[in-house]
Structures are given as C-alpha cells and as structure tokens.
Image 1: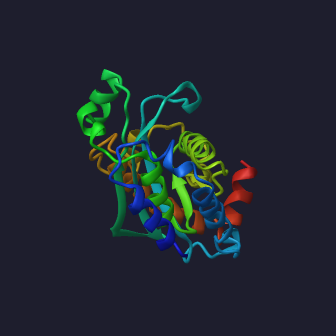
Image 2: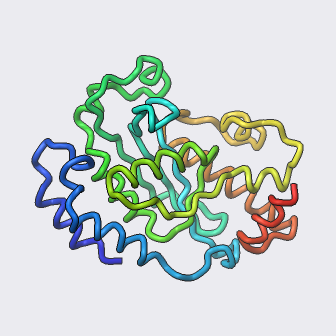
Length: 240
C-alpha cells in the first residue's frame, strides 16, 4: 500500500507545533488519501480465511475517560501482530499521544502517563496514520472492543472525515464459545484464569501483549470446538 506520498506530506508539515490532527490533516488532499487507504484494503474476505492463516493486530488504547463525545481523549496506543495463534513479539507499535488538556490525577495514577510526557508526545493525527500503516489490512482484536471501536470511530470521523472501516473483534467472541459460563470480565481476571502473568497493566502495549496471549490460547481452543474460520467463530458466538 502506497503510504510514502502521504508520509512525505506529513514530514513537510511536521516541525510546526500546531495540532496536525485538527488543522493540517484537514486538507482535501490528505483526507482523500485516507479514504483511498480504506478502499485499498484487500478485497479478500478475512471471515473465510483459515484461523491458522489469519493475520491480526491486537491493540489497546489508554484514554482520559470512557466517552470521546464528552471530550475524553486517547493518550496512548499499543499493538502487536499475530499470525494465527503465533505472537510476533518483534512486531509491535506504541506511542503516546499529545494532549493540551490536564489529564485527571486518577488517570495519571492508573497509567503512569504524566501531563509532561503528553506535552512532548506526537499529535493524534500522526499517530493514527502510523497505526493504520502498521495494521495495514489486518483484522484488529481488542479486549472489551467497544471502547477501542468508539474512540477509533470518533477520531477517524472527526480528524479525517471518513469512517473507521477496520474490523475489530472482541476477545469475548472466543472465550465465550469455549467457556460460555465464564463470569470473568476484566483483563486481569481472565489472564489470571489462564495463567498469564499480569505485567505493566494499563500500559497500552503491555495490555495488548497480554490480550494477544489470551487470543492465542483461545484461538487454539475454538479450533477444538470446530471453528476453522472467523466466520465459524461468529456463527458459534451468535448461538450462545
């Protein structure tokens, strides 16, 4: 996918400390590029791809709250790639995201991200473009995916005036097939249930890595339940 022309545009306007996400990216040329980027996603139906060959990016975001429409912002994003149930530990993405607002003290305490760090971070437009480049046409996976989906949809629509078209699959699609009576919900509880150590909780990349381990474990288990493709996962999940 031809990202280089747009990255040249970005390099040309970087160096200015104006918010690229709100001002510079709002040019017709840049928005047209992003729309074209969405259209160039591979036409093959990932739902029919063998789970062993499925390429996913497991990701997590840290935010200042739960509702982007109420002014809550993404302050970091972390991601790791997988091929089937194999985690590609050397293929990761992480970035803090600039915020001009003072973030709540409870968020600082939870994430360890400080206001000073965010004042020196990159703008959301820069980060999301690079994240899209990293994900390419992979299926996205997240734990409690509605949170990630809401923020990505809002940011894409506001900054780029185009919907966020990547498919985002919730980890619950797998573990509810395997353990339909499992009442655990938090990432910590489900990781401990599966013997996954809790490391760096509420750091976006570390959370993504733990989620990837969950996805890997349950990917193997849903195959034993007869799932060969993601479509099979959807079909079985719908019957729960």
